[in-house]
Length: 343
Image (tube, rainbow, N blue to C red; front, side):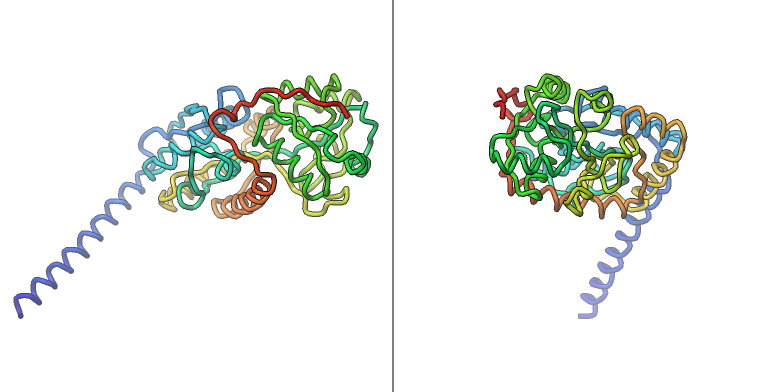
């Protein structure tokens, strides 16, 4: 009996020693972080806002942390392929994900690629944001959000809006507006934002929630009519335009945003090192200028701030996606342009 007791105590001590050694080893590894290049996976092609912002902010973070940040473009499935690769990567702080609002939406839309926030990826830091603007063709004859809603209610299911693709931010924002305004407008899906603007200018489609940068010159010269912006405050680019919230829909807040996430088990001290470097990078004048060139503003915050924001966005878009029955599969990520009907 005594021998068994001694053996049991020895086993307990060995187990405790093993745990202590593992913790010590992890602490030593983390204390030396970073000691090799850090990858940022971007789920979209080079040259777009996600790619450019990851490169310029990542380079500045590298200067601050004394490390090299390498951007890798892993395109496909609206960014979900890159998300899944990061979710499956070692949680050691050396593989990060450029995370736009599409990452939130894809979790609920994809039929083939699955991941879950909090279980597979976690927040690191926010980086940049911009509002959308609701624009219409002058031929529609409306000047305010109230005018547009009145017209849509008079012609339910007739008025069409352009999107940059099924499940895109422009699509989701429009469906959210349908929900809160109690109207039914119909999506016309394009392969990207460029074609949507061309058809808006020609009158092929009559309305769209667009990011501000691609349409601001057309609004200023009168070729498109800006009705409202979608952020919580008026946008500096159009201070005279009301927000959607000011136009009768309190709480309406839609921003295009970009942040960074990591595999879910990444240690908190590594997350905080990355978030602190990101905050310092965003305070740099050259980074602010680079973001402005893409139509974005710095979006500062801690890992905890970004986690709370992400979860709120997740709840909002899950509700919209389920209500509008939006699903995408392998063949639907680059939808062809539909032929619009004219109201």
